[in-house]
Length: 488
Ligand SMILES: [Zn+2]
Image (cartoon, rainbow, N blue to C red; front, side):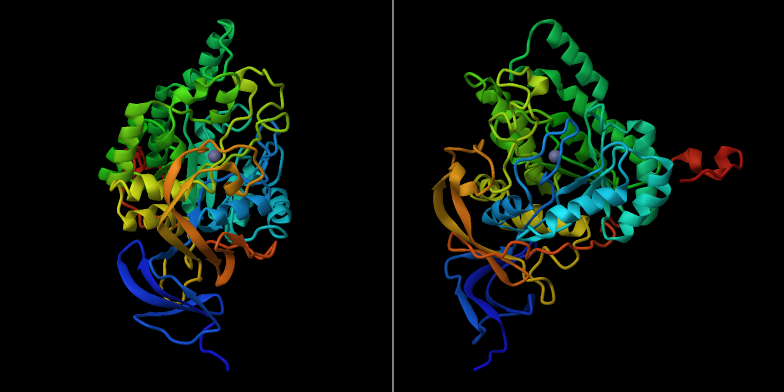
Protein backbone atom coordinates (compact mmCIF):
# COMPACT_ATOMS: atom_id res chain seq x y z
CA UNK A 1 0.00 0.00 0.00
CA UNK A 2 1.39 3.39 -0.90
CA UNK A 3 0.75 6.30 1.35
CA UNK A 4 0.07 9.90 0.59
CA UNK A 5 2.75 11.06 3.05
CA UNK A 6 6.24 9.89 3.98
CA UNK A 7 5.90 10.73 7.65
CA UNK A 8 3.20 11.89 10.01
CA UNK A 9 4.05 13.22 13.45
CA UNK A 10 0.87 12.79 15.44
CA UNK A 11 -0.58 13.66 18.80
CA UNK A 12 1.88 16.41 19.65
CA UNK A 13 1.63 20.05 20.58
CA UNK A 14 2.88 22.20 17.72
CA UNK A 15 4.80 25.30 18.69
CA UNK A 16 5.87 28.08 16.34
CA UNK A 17 7.13 31.62 16.90
CA UNK A 18 3.48 32.71 16.63
CA UNK A 19 1.35 30.11 18.38
CA UNK A 20 0.84 26.80 20.17
CA UNK A 21 -1.79 24.29 19.01
CA UNK A 22 -2.59 20.57 19.02
CA UNK A 23 -2.25 18.90 15.69
CA UNK A 24 -0.64 16.40 13.36
CA UNK A 25 1.99 17.32 10.82
CA UNK A 26 2.56 15.49 7.53
CA UNK A 27 5.83 15.40 5.63
CA UNK A 28 6.48 14.48 2.00
CA UNK A 29 9.64 14.80 -0.09
CA UNK A 30 11.46 16.57 2.73
CA UNK A 31 8.85 19.31 3.01
CA UNK A 32 6.04 19.98 5.42
CA UNK A 33 2.98 18.88 3.43
CA UNK A 34 0.15 19.88 5.72
CA UNK A 35 -0.97 20.40 9.27
CA UNK A 36 -4.38 19.25 10.50
CA UNK A 37 -6.16 18.16 13.64
CA UNK A 38 -5.77 14.54 12.60
CA UNK A 39 -3.89 13.02 9.66
CA UNK A 40 -4.12 9.29 8.87
CA UNK A 41 -1.75 7.06 6.96
CA UNK A 42 1.93 7.64 6.09
CA UNK A 43 4.88 5.30 5.65
CA UNK A 44 6.17 6.24 9.06
CA UNK A 45 4.17 7.52 12.00
CA UNK A 46 5.91 9.18 14.93
CA UNK A 47 3.97 9.42 18.17
CA UNK A 48 4.49 12.83 19.74
CA UNK A 49 1.91 12.50 22.52
CA UNK A 50 2.95 14.69 25.44
CA UNK A 51 5.67 16.29 23.37
CA UNK A 52 6.34 19.63 21.73
CA UNK A 53 6.85 19.72 17.97
CA UNK A 54 8.87 22.77 16.92
CA UNK A 55 10.94 24.09 14.06
CA UNK A 56 14.41 22.61 14.47
CA UNK A 57 16.96 24.92 16.03
CA UNK A 58 19.17 27.03 13.79
CA UNK A 59 22.58 27.64 15.31
CA UNK A 60 23.70 30.94 13.86
CA UNK A 61 27.01 31.36 15.70
CA UNK A 62 29.46 28.45 15.87
CA UNK A 63 33.03 27.73 14.87
CA UNK A 64 33.38 24.41 13.07
CA UNK A 65 36.55 23.11 11.38
CA UNK A 66 37.91 26.63 11.63
CA UNK A 67 41.45 27.80 12.34
CA UNK A 68 41.65 30.67 14.78
CA UNK A 69 43.77 33.68 13.78
CA UNK A 70 46.59 32.15 15.84
CA UNK A 71 46.28 28.92 13.86
CA UNK A 72 44.52 26.57 16.33
CA UNK A 73 42.04 24.22 14.61
CA UNK A 74 38.71 23.80 16.40
CA UNK A 75 38.17 20.32 17.84
CA UNK A 76 34.92 19.76 15.96
CA UNK A 77 34.82 19.09 12.24
CA UNK A 78 31.59 19.23 10.24
CA UNK A 79 30.70 15.68 11.23
CA UNK A 80 31.08 15.91 15.02
CA UNK A 81 29.95 19.53 15.03
CA UNK A 82 26.74 18.77 13.15
CA UNK A 83 26.06 15.59 15.14
CA UNK A 84 26.45 17.53 18.39
CA UNK A 85 24.22 20.30 17.04
CA UNK A 86 21.54 17.73 16.15
CA UNK A 87 21.64 16.10 19.59
CA UNK A 88 21.05 19.59 20.92
CA UNK A 89 17.86 20.05 18.87
CA UNK A 90 19.29 21.81 15.81
CA UNK A 91 18.46 20.89 12.24
CA UNK A 92 20.56 23.59 10.55
CA UNK A 93 23.63 25.62 11.40
CA UNK A 94 25.58 28.54 9.99
CA UNK A 95 29.26 28.28 11.00
CA UNK A 96 31.93 30.71 9.82
CA UNK A 97 34.13 30.49 6.76
CA UNK A 98 37.12 32.54 7.86
CA UNK A 99 39.32 34.57 5.57
CA UNK A 100 42.80 35.02 6.98
CA UNK A 101 45.02 37.77 5.61
CA UNK A 102 46.27 37.15 2.11
CA UNK A 103 43.57 34.59 1.23
CA UNK A 104 41.09 35.10 -1.57
CA UNK A 105 37.42 34.70 -0.69
CA UNK A 106 36.98 32.06 -3.42
CA UNK A 107 39.73 29.90 -1.91
CA UNK A 108 38.17 30.27 1.57
CA UNK A 109 34.77 29.11 0.34
CA UNK A 110 36.33 26.21 -1.55
CA UNK A 111 38.18 25.14 1.60
CA UNK A 112 35.03 25.18 3.72
CA UNK A 113 32.96 23.42 1.05
CA UNK A 114 35.56 20.65 1.19
CA UNK A 115 35.22 20.46 4.97
CA UNK A 116 31.43 20.65 5.15
CA UNK A 117 29.91 18.87 2.15
CA UNK A 118 31.24 15.33 2.79
CA UNK A 119 30.58 15.50 6.52
CA UNK A 120 27.64 17.54 7.73
CA UNK A 121 24.54 15.63 8.87
CA UNK A 122 22.38 18.78 8.91
CA UNK A 123 21.94 21.61 6.41
CA UNK A 124 24.46 24.41 6.65
CA UNK A 125 25.53 27.74 5.28
CA UNK A 126 28.42 30.05 6.18
CA UNK A 127 28.88 33.54 7.47
CA UNK A 128 31.98 34.85 5.75
CA UNK A 129 34.59 36.32 8.11
CA UNK A 130 36.39 39.14 6.32
CA UNK A 131 39.81 40.05 7.73
CA UNK A 132 41.45 41.47 4.62
CA UNK A 133 39.14 43.91 2.80
CA UNK A 134 41.41 44.61 -0.17
CA UNK A 135 40.01 46.56 -3.15
CA UNK A 136 39.50 43.28 -5.02
CA UNK A 137 37.70 41.71 -2.05
CA UNK A 138 35.39 44.71 -1.77
CA UNK A 139 34.69 45.28 -5.45
CA UNK A 140 34.61 41.73 -6.70
CA UNK A 141 35.04 38.87 -4.25
CA UNK A 142 32.36 39.78 -1.70
CA UNK A 143 29.73 40.32 -4.41
CA UNK A 144 30.62 36.89 -5.80
CA UNK A 145 30.25 35.26 -2.37
CA UNK A 146 26.93 37.03 -2.04
CA UNK A 147 25.80 35.65 -5.41
CA UNK A 148 26.54 32.14 -4.10
CA UNK A 149 24.08 32.69 -1.26
CA UNK A 150 26.54 33.72 1.44
CA UNK A 151 24.62 36.79 2.53
CA UNK A 152 26.28 37.72 5.83
CA UNK A 153 29.79 39.00 6.48
CA UNK A 154 31.43 39.05 9.89
CA UNK A 155 34.12 41.47 10.96
CA UNK A 156 36.22 41.84 14.08
CA UNK A 157 37.06 45.09 15.83
CA UNK A 158 39.59 43.24 17.99
CA UNK A 159 42.53 40.81 17.53
CA UNK A 160 45.45 42.30 15.57
CA UNK A 161 45.26 39.63 12.86
CA UNK A 162 41.50 40.06 12.29
CA UNK A 163 40.66 43.67 13.13
CA UNK A 164 39.69 45.54 9.96
CA UNK A 165 39.72 49.01 11.54
CA UNK A 166 36.93 51.56 11.39
CA UNK A 167 37.55 52.40 7.71
CA UNK A 168 37.56 48.71 6.79
CA UNK A 169 34.28 48.25 8.67
CA UNK A 170 32.76 51.21 6.79
CA UNK A 171 33.87 49.70 3.47
CA UNK A 172 32.40 46.28 4.29
CA UNK A 173 29.15 47.79 5.60
CA UNK A 174 28.83 49.75 2.36
CA UNK A 175 29.36 46.70 0.13
CA UNK A 176 27.01 44.63 2.28
CA UNK A 177 24.32 47.27 2.12
CA UNK A 178 24.58 47.52 -1.66
CA UNK A 179 23.78 43.80 -1.98
CA UNK A 180 21.33 43.29 0.87
CA UNK A 181 23.90 41.42 2.95
CA UNK A 182 24.10 41.73 6.72
CA UNK A 183 27.30 42.69 8.53
CA UNK A 184 27.98 40.96 11.85
CA UNK A 185 30.43 42.45 14.28
CA UNK A 186 32.55 41.25 17.19
CA UNK A 187 32.71 44.50 19.12
CA UNK A 188 35.55 45.02 21.58
CA UNK A 189 38.03 47.92 21.66
CA UNK A 190 41.31 46.35 20.50
CA UNK A 191 43.66 48.95 21.97
CA UNK A 192 41.94 48.91 25.36
CA UNK A 193 42.42 45.13 25.54
CA UNK A 194 46.05 45.32 24.42
CA UNK A 195 46.77 48.07 26.92
CA UNK A 196 45.21 46.02 29.74
CA UNK A 197 47.16 42.95 28.65
CA UNK A 198 50.44 44.86 28.83
CA UNK A 199 49.71 46.12 32.33
CA UNK A 200 48.64 42.69 33.58
CA UNK A 201 51.70 41.11 32.01
CA UNK A 202 54.00 43.66 33.65
CA UNK A 203 52.37 42.84 37.00
CA UNK A 204 52.94 39.11 36.45
CA UNK A 205 49.17 38.50 36.39
CA UNK A 206 48.90 35.60 33.94
CA UNK A 207 46.42 33.10 35.51
CA UNK A 208 43.19 32.38 33.59
CA UNK A 209 41.13 34.62 35.88
CA UNK A 210 42.94 37.71 34.55
CA UNK A 211 41.39 37.08 31.15
CA UNK A 212 38.19 38.70 32.47
CA UNK A 213 40.10 41.73 33.76
CA UNK A 214 41.92 42.15 30.45
CA UNK A 215 38.75 42.69 28.42
CA UNK A 216 36.80 45.38 30.30
CA UNK A 217 33.07 45.89 30.00
CA UNK A 218 33.85 49.36 28.68
CA UNK A 219 35.81 47.81 25.80
CA UNK A 220 32.61 46.12 24.61
CA UNK A 221 30.31 49.05 25.30
CA UNK A 222 32.56 51.52 23.48
CA UNK A 223 32.95 49.24 20.47
CA UNK A 224 29.23 48.46 20.22
CA UNK A 225 28.48 52.17 20.24
CA UNK A 226 31.17 52.78 17.63
CA UNK A 227 30.03 49.93 15.38
CA UNK A 228 26.46 51.18 15.46
CA UNK A 229 27.63 54.71 14.68
CA UNK A 230 29.58 53.44 11.67
CA UNK A 231 26.56 51.46 10.48
CA UNK A 232 24.32 54.49 10.90
CA UNK A 233 26.69 56.70 8.94
CA UNK A 234 26.25 54.51 5.87
CA UNK A 235 22.70 53.44 6.75
CA UNK A 236 23.54 49.73 6.74
CA UNK A 237 22.01 47.05 8.96
CA UNK A 238 24.20 45.49 11.65
CA UNK A 239 24.15 42.35 13.78
CA UNK A 240 26.06 42.58 17.06
CA UNK A 241 27.24 39.11 18.10
CA UNK A 242 27.65 37.76 21.64
CA UNK A 243 26.68 40.82 23.69
CA UNK A 244 28.02 40.21 27.20
CA UNK A 245 27.50 43.47 29.08
CA UNK A 246 24.64 45.45 30.62
CA UNK A 247 25.89 48.60 28.95
CA UNK A 248 26.19 46.95 25.53
CA UNK A 249 22.70 45.48 25.76
CA UNK A 250 21.31 48.85 26.84
CA UNK A 251 22.81 50.54 23.79
CA UNK A 252 21.27 47.90 21.51
CA UNK A 253 17.89 48.29 23.21
CA UNK A 254 18.00 52.08 22.87
CA UNK A 255 18.93 51.91 19.18
CA UNK A 256 16.20 49.36 18.45
CA UNK A 257 13.73 51.62 20.19
CA UNK A 258 14.86 54.46 17.91
CA UNK A 259 14.25 52.32 14.82
CA UNK A 260 17.88 51.58 13.90
CA UNK A 261 18.16 48.40 11.86
CA UNK A 262 20.20 46.49 14.37
CA UNK A 263 20.11 42.90 15.54
CA UNK A 264 21.85 41.26 18.45
CA UNK A 265 22.40 38.00 20.26
CA UNK A 266 23.75 36.83 23.56
CA UNK A 267 24.94 33.34 24.50
CA UNK A 268 24.10 30.84 27.27
CA UNK A 269 27.58 31.18 28.81
CA UNK A 270 26.93 34.82 29.69
CA UNK A 271 23.66 33.80 31.36
CA UNK A 272 24.97 30.67 33.09
CA UNK A 273 28.49 31.47 34.32
CA UNK A 274 30.43 34.32 35.89
CA UNK A 275 34.05 35.31 35.97
CA UNK A 276 34.39 33.40 39.25
CA UNK A 277 34.37 30.30 37.02
CA UNK A 278 37.65 31.58 35.57
CA UNK A 279 39.07 31.36 39.08
CA UNK A 280 38.47 27.64 39.52
CA UNK A 281 41.41 25.70 41.01
CA UNK A 282 44.54 24.98 38.98
CA UNK A 283 44.06 25.59 35.27
CA UNK A 284 40.33 24.64 35.32
CA UNK A 285 39.54 28.28 34.68
CA UNK A 286 40.96 27.86 31.16
CA UNK A 287 37.78 25.93 30.29
CA UNK A 288 35.86 29.19 30.72
CA UNK A 289 38.08 31.45 28.64
CA UNK A 290 36.08 33.02 25.82
CA UNK A 291 35.83 36.52 24.40
CA UNK A 292 34.15 38.68 25.40
CA UNK A 293 34.72 37.20 28.85
CA UNK A 294 32.26 36.03 31.49
CA UNK A 295 31.01 38.83 33.74
CA UNK A 296 29.08 38.85 37.05
CA UNK A 297 25.71 38.04 38.62
CA UNK A 298 24.19 41.47 38.06
CA UNK A 299 25.12 41.21 34.40
CA UNK A 300 23.42 37.82 34.16
CA UNK A 301 20.20 39.26 35.54
CA UNK A 302 20.35 42.23 33.20
CA UNK A 303 21.04 40.03 30.16
CA UNK A 304 18.13 37.75 31.06
CA UNK A 305 15.87 40.83 31.14
CA UNK A 306 17.05 41.69 27.64
CA UNK A 307 16.37 38.09 26.52
CA UNK A 308 12.84 38.37 27.96
CA UNK A 309 12.27 41.85 26.61
CA UNK A 310 13.38 41.15 23.05
CA UNK A 311 16.63 43.12 22.86
CA UNK A 312 18.22 39.88 21.68
CA UNK A 313 16.94 38.38 18.45
CA UNK A 314 18.66 35.11 19.16
CA UNK A 315 20.56 33.19 21.78
CA UNK A 316 23.48 31.47 20.09
CA UNK A 317 26.13 29.13 21.42
CA UNK A 318 29.32 30.69 20.00
CA UNK A 319 30.53 27.08 20.08
CA UNK A 320 34.32 27.42 19.79
CA UNK A 321 35.63 24.02 20.85
CA UNK A 322 39.24 23.63 22.03
CA UNK A 323 40.03 20.54 24.06
CA UNK A 324 41.44 20.80 27.58
CA UNK A 325 44.80 19.48 26.40
CA UNK A 326 47.83 20.37 24.30
CA UNK A 327 45.84 20.11 21.02
CA UNK A 328 43.53 22.89 22.17
CA UNK A 329 43.54 25.12 25.22
CA UNK A 330 47.19 24.33 26.03
CA UNK A 331 48.74 24.41 22.58
CA UNK A 332 51.28 26.81 24.09
CA UNK A 333 51.90 24.68 27.17
CA UNK A 334 49.93 23.57 30.22
CA UNK A 335 50.88 26.67 32.19
CA UNK A 336 50.58 29.19 29.37
CA UNK A 337 49.64 32.74 30.38
CA UNK A 338 45.97 33.51 29.71
CA UNK A 339 46.56 35.39 26.40
CA UNK A 340 48.15 32.23 24.98
CA UNK A 341 45.37 29.84 26.00
CA UNK A 342 43.00 28.97 23.12
CA UNK A 343 40.02 31.24 23.35
CA UNK A 344 36.51 29.76 23.20
CA UNK A 345 33.97 27.52 24.85
CA UNK A 346 31.92 24.58 23.53
CA UNK A 347 28.13 24.53 23.87
CA UNK A 348 26.36 23.72 20.60
CA UNK A 349 24.44 20.79 22.16
CA UNK A 350 23.72 22.61 25.42
CA UNK A 351 22.34 25.85 23.97
CA UNK A 352 18.70 24.87 23.52
CA UNK A 353 18.27 22.56 26.55
CA UNK A 354 19.75 25.37 28.67
CA UNK A 355 17.50 28.04 27.12
CA UNK A 356 14.43 25.83 27.46
CA UNK A 357 15.07 24.87 31.07
CA UNK A 358 16.32 28.23 32.35
CA UNK A 359 14.25 30.40 30.02
CA UNK A 360 10.89 28.74 29.33
CA UNK A 361 10.42 26.69 32.48
CA UNK A 362 11.36 29.60 34.76
CA UNK A 363 8.85 31.84 32.96
CA UNK A 364 11.50 34.26 31.65
CA UNK A 365 10.49 33.60 28.04
CA UNK A 366 7.44 32.07 26.40
CA UNK A 367 7.50 29.00 24.17
CA UNK A 368 6.99 31.38 21.23
CA UNK A 369 10.06 33.37 22.22
CA UNK A 370 11.99 30.14 22.58
CA UNK A 371 11.21 29.19 18.98
CA UNK A 372 11.93 32.71 17.77
CA UNK A 373 15.26 33.01 19.57
CA UNK A 374 16.42 29.50 18.75
CA UNK A 375 15.28 29.26 15.13
CA UNK A 376 12.76 31.57 13.47
CA UNK A 377 14.56 34.88 13.95
CA UNK A 378 17.84 33.49 12.62
CA UNK A 379 15.97 32.13 9.59
CA UNK A 380 14.43 35.53 8.88
CA UNK A 381 17.48 37.67 9.62
CA UNK A 382 19.95 35.46 7.73
CA UNK A 383 17.78 34.65 4.74
CA UNK A 384 17.04 30.96 5.38
CA UNK A 385 13.69 31.36 3.72
CA UNK A 386 12.62 27.70 3.79
CA UNK A 387 13.47 27.12 7.43
CA UNK A 388 12.50 28.21 10.93
CA UNK A 389 8.76 27.60 10.69
CA UNK A 390 6.21 24.80 10.39
CA UNK A 391 4.45 26.30 7.36
CA UNK A 392 3.42 23.87 4.62
CA UNK A 393 6.02 24.08 1.85
CA UNK A 394 8.88 24.74 4.24
CA UNK A 395 11.67 22.23 4.81
CA UNK A 396 10.67 19.55 7.29
CA UNK A 397 13.34 20.64 9.79
CA UNK A 398 11.68 19.65 13.01
CA UNK A 399 12.64 19.03 16.62
CA UNK A 400 10.40 17.02 18.92
CA UNK A 401 10.93 17.86 22.57
CA UNK A 402 10.07 16.03 25.76
CA UNK A 403 9.37 19.03 28.00
CA UNK A 404 9.61 16.99 31.19
CA UNK A 405 12.75 14.98 30.62
CA UNK A 406 15.10 15.80 33.48
CA UNK A 407 18.80 15.32 32.92
CA UNK A 408 22.15 16.09 34.46
CA UNK A 409 24.42 17.51 31.75
CA UNK A 410 27.30 15.14 31.06
CA UNK A 411 30.03 15.53 28.52
CA UNK A 412 29.27 12.17 26.85
CA UNK A 413 25.77 13.41 26.00
CA UNK A 414 27.18 16.36 24.02
CA UNK A 415 28.38 14.03 21.21
CA UNK A 416 31.12 16.45 20.19
CA UNK A 417 34.87 15.99 19.80
CA UNK A 418 35.57 17.77 23.07
CA UNK A 419 36.78 16.40 26.39
CA UNK A 420 34.68 18.65 28.63
CA UNK A 421 31.50 20.69 28.73
CA UNK A 422 31.33 23.82 30.86
CA UNK A 423 27.71 22.87 31.63
CA UNK A 424 28.83 19.61 33.29
CA UNK A 425 26.67 18.69 36.28
CA UNK A 426 23.95 21.25 35.58
CA UNK A 427 20.42 19.85 36.04
CA UNK A 428 18.15 20.76 33.12
CA UNK A 429 14.55 19.88 32.31
CA UNK A 430 13.32 19.43 28.75
CA UNK A 431 15.29 17.88 25.93
CA UNK A 432 14.99 17.20 22.21
CA UNK A 433 14.25 13.52 21.55
CA UNK A 434 13.86 13.55 17.77
CA UNK A 435 15.42 15.86 15.19
CA UNK A 436 14.62 15.78 11.47
CA UNK A 437 16.40 17.56 8.68
CA UNK A 438 14.39 17.89 5.45
CA UNK A 439 12.22 15.01 6.62
CA UNK A 440 15.10 12.61 7.33
CA UNK A 441 15.67 11.44 10.87
CA UNK A 442 18.94 12.73 12.26
CA UNK A 443 18.40 11.84 15.90
CA UNK A 444 15.59 9.64 17.18
CA UNK A 445 15.10 8.35 20.74
CA UNK A 446 18.66 9.20 21.65
CA UNK A 447 20.19 7.44 18.64
CA UNK A 448 21.95 8.92 15.64
CA UNK A 449 20.22 7.96 12.38
CA UNK A 450 22.00 10.28 9.99
CA UNK A 451 24.28 9.52 7.11
CA UNK A 452 27.53 11.46 7.04
CA UNK A 453 27.28 14.14 4.38
CA UNK A 454 23.47 14.14 4.15
CA UNK A 455 23.33 17.85 5.03
CA UNK A 456 23.25 20.30 2.15
CA UNK A 457 24.63 23.77 1.62
CA UNK A 458 21.80 26.28 1.75
CA UNK A 459 22.13 29.28 -0.54
CA UNK A 460 20.63 32.08 1.49
CA UNK A 461 18.47 34.95 0.32
CA UNK A 462 19.40 38.55 1.06
CA UNK A 463 19.03 39.33 4.73
CA UNK A 464 15.44 39.83 5.83
CA UNK A 465 16.46 42.97 7.64
CA UNK A 466 13.70 45.06 6.15
CA UNK A 467 13.49 48.36 4.32
CA UNK A 468 15.56 51.45 4.93
CA UNK A 469 14.32 53.50 7.82
CA UNK A 470 15.98 56.74 6.78
CA UNK A 471 18.94 57.17 9.09
CA UNK A 472 20.82 59.09 6.43
CA UNK A 473 23.58 61.21 7.91
CA UNK A 474 22.99 64.87 6.97
CA UNK A 475 26.49 65.04 5.48
CA UNK A 476 25.27 62.76 2.68
CA UNK A 477 22.51 65.14 1.82
CA UNK A 478 23.74 66.86 -1.35
CA UNK A 479 22.13 70.12 -0.27
CA UNK A 480 24.14 70.32 2.93
CA UNK A 481 27.31 68.95 1.29
CA UNK A 482 27.70 71.94 -0.99
CA UNK A 483 26.18 69.97 -3.85
CA UNK A 484 28.66 67.12 -3.70
CA UNK A 485 27.13 63.63 -3.82
CA UNK A 486 29.31 61.05 -2.06
CA UNK A 487 26.46 58.90 -0.78
CA UNK A 488 27.42 55.28 -0.04
ZN1 LIG B 1 32.33 33.25 17.87
